[in-house]
Amino acid sequence: MSDRHQVVVIGSGFGGLFGAKALKRADVDVTMIAKTTHHLFQPLLYQVATGILSQGEIAPPTREVLHKQKNATVLLGEVTDIDLEARTVTSQLLGRPTTVSYDSLIVAAGAGQSYFGNDHFAEFAPGMKSIDDALELRGRIFGSFELAELAAQRGESFEHLLTFVVVGAGPTGVELAGQIAELARRTLKRDFKHIRTEHARVILVDAAPQVLPPFGAKLGEKTKVALEKLGIDVVLGAMVTNVDERGLEWKFKDGRVERIESVTKIWAAGVSASPLGKTLSEQTGAPLDRAGRISVNPDLTLPGHPEVFVVGDMINLDHLPGVAQVAIQGAKHAAKEIERRLEGKPSAGPFKYFDKGSMATISRFRAVASIGNLKLTGFVAWLMWLVVHLFYITGFKNRVTAVMHWFVSFLGSDRAERTTTLQQIFGRSALERLEGGASSLVSPPGQYDAERAAADETRRKELEEQAAEEVRLTDAGERGVHQPA
Image (cartoon, rainbow, N blue to C red; front, side, top):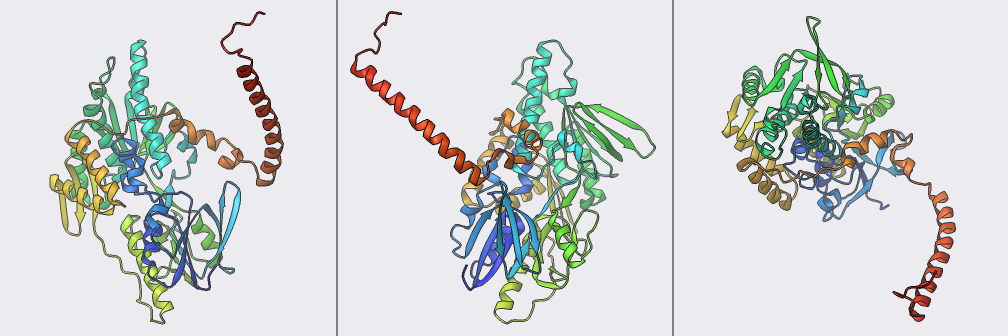
């Protein structure tokens, strides 16, 4: 490593990527450590799940994004430990540890799905936080229609296969429910012979008393009405209490319990901050909230550790929402502070968040937008959503292909990405059943080398014998000639 100031960035999401890019002209070496090889534009994951966009359009390779930044290095691995005293970060990739030292640290590890203590729900109701999640859900959603067609052809019951339940009435839940409804009523209605896909039932359920609480009561009510016009059943004030392979149950405040038979359930309710928040809390004493977010100083640093910045979904500060803009602006603030320190300048002061508003699509040509005191619905809000999301998609190529796919999906009725595989649907569950996860499928380096040496020698002998036999057959003219028994 060079003698320059070493900055380690944890995470390749909005916070990590924008933090690394903000340091491109600084006299520092930047090392980004991330558990995926891509930068994920998470707000559009639901479009991957419903066949509108491909994963590549919303998840460009991080190395490609940063390849022109001479002071940036990208390392693949999941961070498992941060030692604040030693100033080191340790990551793991398939059981192989890597430790990197830092002078300044930006922690932007994001958040995962929260099942509110019922993690076993995840087996039957995947979340919506990663490309793996979106591809699995794409397989489950389109697969349900295929299974329903088979069941109908055999004269069996198939209503549970055409019942889709989305848990959580936040932006992700609303967008998913809307797109599944459009998928059933527009895209697939002429593709099947034994079922009427437009009769599919889509249910949006939440324990909250309204849809889209962060958007306010007025927009929440308008969104609910718009969803119901699409044929979506909106169930509010109902807390999901059980999820299994064939359905789920929810409970109302008055004690009533209802069960819905459904094979395809999607969990879009609640987030839980990265476990690294707990690691940092144990070493600094900074408290965690119920979602695992860590309390930070007004300048986004950790108490007693001004060299460590925490940004994005991991922080508990001034009731900041868990949205992309908080991560982007926080990362830029951290990068600016690091540069000012190296230049001997005083701190720029506390982090100041500029709220650029919130948006969510309901269906094609219809969205809701809350920007300060401005509340919009309908086509104008949809156009604003379109422009904003195009602006933040990384890469010109991805913007062009996204527009093309949106044109096909919104003006027409087709979906460009309808390919599904069994691997998408069952891969996650299969890996989770392995004691060591994916690392169980990979041999330790020493063991692999020894086994490979022995296998190579055996294989070499087999190849030599096979080649000699091929030569003999050709020279003896025996190919194609009947040989007596």
